[in-house]
Image (cartoon, rainbow, N blue to C red; front, side):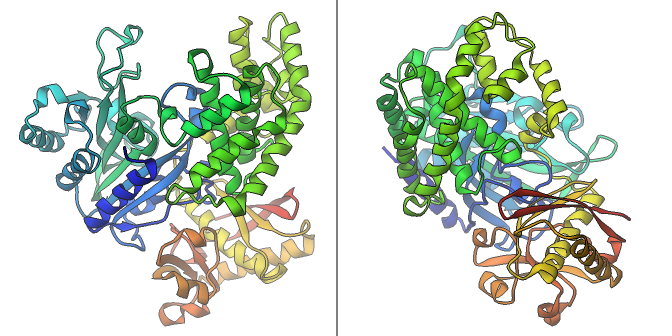
Length: 610
């Protein structure tokens, strides 16, 4: 039986054999995507290249990407959903298309992983509106199956936009203007020993939610782009965007639909059993799966620098940890101390350190991860008992949702679960109205934004992106070269820029920074990129986030200078783009607000005024 680490190695080596260049995975905590907090798919950081930008490593790529989907928090507890997962990905940025991707992936599944042919099923886009049926993929699959001695009529299933169309926004009606998308062809593994649950329908099929079928790979043929009138035009290049979930591939190899029985989770479940005194049996499975997933997700968020808070990334981390605490408390009958999660987390770190490209280093990261988790658990533990007692006393929870959240720190998911468990009324709308009235973590932030999804390519957003480069360098000119970016968020309305500095800026400093930026705008400097060796980029002083996530070559954006004068540029940054071509297009940038976001961390809000 192959281990999960061996699956990754086989996958990477298979596509490297087919001339793909391996690229490093991006951080799980995104800094330059304006509308999502986390990397929630392998393709998300590659969208500019799917739209035609030149990738530093070429046009056929392969990697393994750590992903986090906070939208899936409510789904965790079944046998296959997690917030944290790994995506095996390969991409063709206009190089090859269906004729190579489909046979390659079939070969990988059947020859490299030796999955049984009889258990594999294929889905193909059946067409709809002004997008035709994917005849090309259908013909390729039919040819492969016939050669294998299989009946295409039994193995190929046709579905519409909901199941076999992929874009970050979902179906075509939800896609914004300029968003890329395309038909997909998915491969499912059928667990033949699992009985179909008739509550999901009379007949089981690949997209049935009963758990008998699990998707193990999705070949997206990204060839369309949404237009202003709602129609689609073909992209200038035909792209392949493949994603395969490691956890589900491991489950298929294990011939067990429960991903929590794979080597990625088996030891973690055992540690939870030891910690709670309960067995991984039907009545305990939901809680144990939530604890295992949430603690793993928390560890990866902490690794990327997130700490528990009531805002954005920190809010999601707090939800993960506190939901784990409540589940463990109920599972163990209150006998597990808040500091008792250490052995579970230690097992997660031990497993993850042996997974290629995980980014986990036990000796370097263990103490910090443990300390963050322990502090949050102990802090929450002081109110946990009182909160559970309060819920017991309440006849109904309706109208008390925000009170329980604010007073006892209960995540809304836990309030919902406890209300259902104890058959008490609840109204989530009331909770979100209260939440919106009390802090900036409104429902739009806590629900819509955390879904991930769209990279805004509006003209004003692109201008804001260029303005952050000017702001970054102006801060360093004014405050010192030790100042560096720690995060950013850019929308069409404003830009937000986080950086390290000991105190709030004075009015004089802010005015100086503004003047520098606007002088560079007035100078109408050229903005351009070069793809150069990463070590050379660092030598000439390139700054920015994710320096360690690039390969041997990096895309470097320059502001000012040109060609052989690039070393004289005003700003030199690691960046994927996009940007305006001359600074003069920004007209003017004004700093509108500043705030402290933690010890030694400041935040500036600014606006481009054209």
